[in-house]
Length: 108
Length: 108
DNA sequence: TCAAAATATTCCTTGACAGGAATATTCCTA
DNA sequence: TAGGAATATTCCTGTCAAGGAATATTTTGA
Image (cartoon, chains in turn brown, yellow, green, cyan):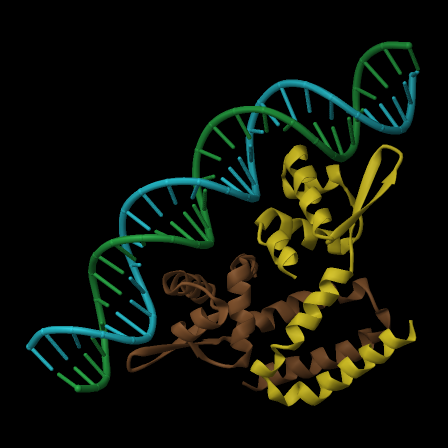
């Protein structure tokens, strides 16, 4: 959780993550789209990778980076504990959703 | 969004935020519970306050800090755009939840 | 009014981290 | 197989932020 926030606290890394919502991208593509230099892009991707936010899939010369769902799921769970701070009205519905998710998890 | 992640990237600040889930607390109480010195606690609270994560309510000598819901709501919205990364099964239910939230927002 | 409690702020030092530039590495292709 | 993409790594430097210690500020209560 902490490593997730650390990784996302850097503006360019946050941009990378938001860009990767569209789907897997190459280092060069990321660098181009965001106006970053290649080395810094690789370095940021390294940090994101260490934090488990992205994973690589190498095809020939290129390396495709894409988002890993786990950290986002963790954030979701983490956020759940703050939900009662606001909007009490949806607690029951949220509970239902959480229950569904829990059952889903058990099946695996 | 960025300022939220920055504020939460510091371990002690994350602890403070998690502690404040229980409810408003005094600087001294926070410092005690987390084993922090008072000055650093005040400094961390300052950062959290600048990021809009907490707000103060002064009563006589004490200052009670408590969480503000807005940043967490923003994170929720932000996370929504990543939800299709996993668990497609819940998209429809999530959509329903989002629709409810949207309608709720309109009423104000 | 004065001492003490609660909190905030300042100054200093140190460590971490991001960017730039250069270089290494890997793998393809002509 | 040599050259060139595409990517990763290293080294260096400057900046910034966190902790420690001391001090300032505010407010209470005797």
